[in-house]
Length: 483
Image (cartoon, rainbow, N blue to C red; front, side, top):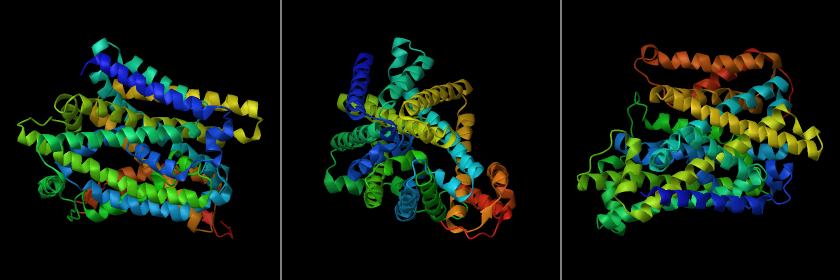
């Protein structure tokens, strides 16, 4: 693909984002940055959350992974849907009732300042690692597709990328993100639809014929029942439910968007509509994966060694210029729709939870917000460059897996806070928070020996949360706490 065309597309994309930022950030104050003044249309938030949930990693990996695990990912997504309903029915009413800006303020009201900071700290660590990892993977694709042609070093690519995100988010914050996420979701979904259309045309398959072709393929198997396998239905479903409860309902990044809706009912409506939109989008991604393998098989194309390379390889080389452009816009949108909201959430959580921004006047608030936003931009850039320096896929994936461990203490803190009336000894909570992931790591490492061949998958998060709850019970006493 012509690098100058790629340059034009990427620059055009960012000019559009800048335009949205200018329109949404006029007269924006810190309240607009953190909550969008609670005036976001629920349907806009629902549509935009699809793009924020489906990161660049998902955009690249899910279609290719079909060749390894078929449609098993759909089992996990089914659990996600139930998790979204739990968030809509239980957590959103709680957050609106307490009128929270940072959702971790709940832990302060329930347990105390150290519990509050423990939850927020684990979120900051998780989000920095997760957002940096996702941007690192996608930046690698963009580097090969464009920047290498101009001998632009990866370091400069990362710095410019983060700088652009900072520019269009530092004023409007979440108010801007709600609108840019909508645009980015449109590009992401359009890329998949464009590719499906191109493949169906190439294979001369239409309507029901296309559906039958996908359904009859061996890669379209959904349910797996072997209890020892990581793809077991019950493992995937339950893990999907709890991952959503924690990584959406107890995650400042995802909930900050929901809390921009006008009221509790609109936020709940947004979550319900989003859950079905997300399911449809994932089915599109998985169906695309089957079609990519069918296309490669029927055209005698050698499958790349890494499944993550399949979609980029075919989209940029075999489906024509319109699909290549759509793919480029889709992967760019998928990367930045998660990164820009992560940066805003990090700024919000740090400013509210650690710097107590609400106690200052507006002038001071703007300065705190500005420098916090800049600080996390620098931290994200440095973390991405560290991933690049490591340059070892197994180590990088392991580091990303570590971020998953950090959500366990958050799950345990919220569950214990919501469903127990016991009062914890606040000063011991950070120790419990650190101990739970460490214990989980060793249980996971030796699980096959301890549990007769059992392998932990996503359900390790549940174990992590349970250990945290048990630890909190040990350092607590009965108290008539009203939640």
